[in-house]
Image 1 (cartoon, rainbow, N blue to C red):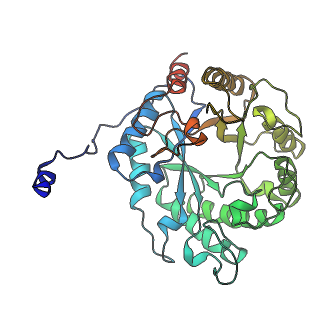
Image 2: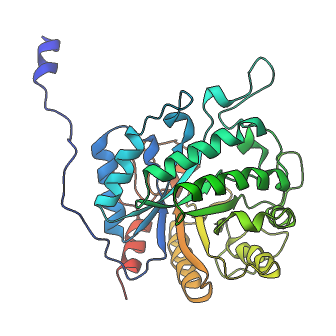
Length: 351
């Protein structure tokens, strides 16, 4: 009987097909980092994108793992990225693609050394660059910017291998050439450095890492700088300093760009925001989060004219972590808008 009841049970939500949409916003700076790659059901992808559009964000960042797409060398499965990118275009949203996670065939053998999903060594840099070229060619006209790797100044992001700035520039050079061969108009976003003041085998201060990139000639191999600028417990007005992590730390990074004659180069803040978890030491109250986020958008819009997008982390998690990461989200896993969503929506739709 249970089996029969299962057969006649109502079907789950189905993806909806809608006419092409336009994002209504007075502030194109507003951008969010989504987590749609982790989503399985089509209707949830589409509902997330609809809510992004309704909030007034015309741009999003999402993660497209190399390992998911090229599980076998030279064989590409574009199904899931097609779904996300085409649905985003349907909603009038532009996608910035972050590309990472190494397929098993490109990782070092676990019998030789400890590996992780991020383990990439220089003998496979060309394979990654080839994948980037294929990705850029496929989504020409839909994805106009890509982020080459993520937080390269952390050893964790290379499979617990420290990669100095000069080596990252070697990596970036191949990516840049492959991407522009596929689409001369694509923007290669370099950097995406983790904000840190650490100097160890685990991490290198982002200011020193950017200086090292320029010293190695890296300025020629990124069209725009990607920046992560979290506020932690401080308001966006707090002054920057080399030994402090806060929202305006970005100004110190930009000062390095200016010193290198690169001050006019565009900047995309691809991760930013505040967390309002009740029991995390680096969190703020929900009210502070709203105030700080809106003040940050106003500051960037009025004073940082070279910043093209401020992408807030993160829009929605597919499932709850039951921990502090849940409190970065704008929308709950069951699509309930949190106060920060309504506040940014009101900002985006006010002249």
